[in-house]
Amino acid sequence: MTGATRTLEASGHLIDSGLMAAIMDAVILSGAEFEIAEFEIGRTNQDASRLVITVSAPSAERLEALVGELHRLGCFAAEAPGVTLKAAERDGTAPPDFYSTTNAATLVRIGGEWVPVASQRMDSVIVVEDGRPACRLLREVRQGDRIVCGYEGVRVVPEFKARDRSEFSFMSSEISSERKVELAVRDLAKMMREVVARKGRIVVVAGPVVVHTGGADDLAALVRGGYVQALLGGNAVAVHDIEGALFNTSLGVDLRTGRPVDAGHRNHMAAINAVRGAGGIKAAVHSGLVKSGIMYECVVNNVPFVLAGSLRDDGPLPEVIMDLYEAQAAYTKALAGAELVLMLASMLHSIAVGNMLPSSATTVCVDINPAVVTKLNDRGSGQALGIVTDVGLFLNLLARELG
Image (cartoon, rainbow, N blue to C red):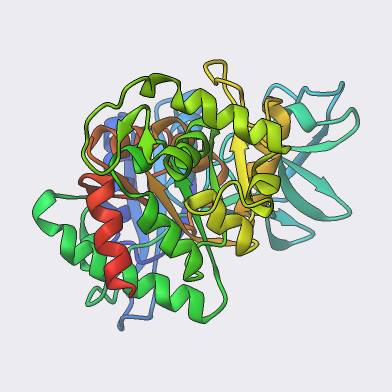
């Protein structure tokens, strides 16, 4: 094929992670051609494979589009030049050809060396200061910042499928069905024990369904047992948890019998009013007003929590952050260094958190609706693993497994 050509490299567990096939498919579907110049297959479980491939497209424009697609699959220029940097002309705005990040580990070539990008997350720009690249939100760009542009000198390292698959068998597919819940819980509990043993961080994202389905006591037990290092959610999960602690109801429904109680519709507002009167969640716990529940355990065990507000919130509780930028920043800070993120029946907050995580963070999403995991994957959180079940049942099984 005449036209434009480019030689690219890729390395890692290319075959068993499906990347080799994905690379070839991308070339063929784009109407281009490839020629494999070198291919070295890893000889052991630990060895990586290495690919050198030349791609040819009918035009330079078609080639650039293809290179962008292959870049996301971990391909990079065989003779990589230095990264292209351009100065931002105004606050909150990047040059038109800025490089938009994924959540996969990324390196940029500076001074002949591949330098890892700090604070990796998707949908951000890369700013280089004093030779150190880091992800930055577009709104945080300042005039004069040196922004990475184009694909040259940028390398993405996709997450590879683990070669040792004897453990965590529920991770062999993206979504585990109902019949695999106990197996998934067993494997997840083992992972949680290992993370805690090495003093790693587990972050839980929880929606109000945790309380409605009777899972509040079990999630509280996980907090009390040291298996939660930060809790993220919205106003509702805290309100209904505290409603349960004060009135033993959730949205006016008795948590023991599952039946509505007389005038129960006002209980969540009464809970908000009581906490506001006490001066906040922490004050309500310290004063003895709130004596049990998820928020109680967070306070008495010094587990930080972040509650992000929305337009539909009643009250809200005093600790709820109603400023969007402030809430995003607080979420990002709480997620720093998280090894495992457990998302419990909260589509909107789970997707938001997924956008903030590097692909290296193990992400487990539990929801009765498999579409929640699908949406996470569609939004770019390809590492999200799903357990399809009632979240209350799941938390009960997990708490029992963890003792």
